Image 1 (cartoon, helix red, strand yellow):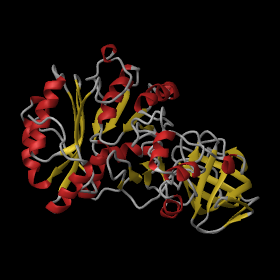
Image 2: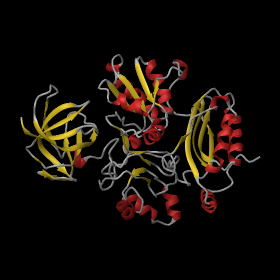
Image 3: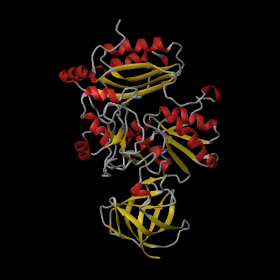
Image 4: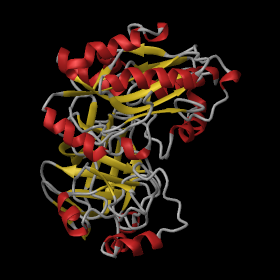
Length: 455
């Protein structure tokens, strides 16, 4: 009885191309009590292998978490294999926005302690006492409520290329790190704020919402089906997207385009870019953002050291990485000092952190100010307290007074004393320029930048 893959990824890709048939990339999850995960795993492998279903699936005593590629012709037969189990009857299948026949090239089903590594002791709280699920329009409506705090429960490399307007995006490598950080930061808002959360497909929020209700948060809500289902609904119903940029996905594609906005930059040159890649050095495989120009110049590597390594004879490459920890290579997200323009994590901001300064004055009390809109917020580097804006109208010069305004930020008046324009010091920024300057308060994607003409 076959319970393993008999073809390599390359052989599978060739067969898929030769078949010329459409495949669907999809994901789903379910929390349930599974008495014998190994038996469950074997049953799934036999059924899915017969349907040429591929993917990466985790099963545990607490349930199943799956990301898969299924032949479109076998979609209903695949759904039937789920209906065999009571806890998966009628389960929602999140079908990808963008399809790629090569999204998965092997069927891998692993038995794990948990289907998502959350670091929680489920015996200490009621995991079924979850937050209220919201559909796309309901989620948008709550986002507009000034009494709402929205939290992205994905990792820094996911939120870096796309997130909801005004969301808190924790600087974390994994889900388990975000829970205590967010809990600590929001201690003062348990009683009177709406805690609104989201993730890729909803599975992380299922556990997080129950955890935060246990921690004493009164009004907890989550995006039903995550970003994937949100995107489907806004397209089908003509709803405005409040998600900006690209949705990171854990397969060959590494991302789905949601809006045309590019909110991140190439980690090597700083140009607007949101395409992730893995370093071509087999001893590295660092996940980072790389534009086409840098990809060509650096031959898909993250540093000069890795570039030199890939040109060594194969035997020398193997010898160099002997004894190194190179497991879990494809999605290793370590933070490298070689990435000069990394937009998240422990930023390498030598050019940004000390490049700009600004004097600020809080003017949350509404006053009449004659102003003109000149740009929008693109990012805030929390560790270095650097704000990034795109100039869309007019010009901005050192000495100008500006107003930064947004539903959460309020109204903040700033005197520009120094600016960094497109990677260099400058006294003036013009339309199309990307600028950064230091701010003691956080800005959000919904914030607008105005030049004050007359106070």
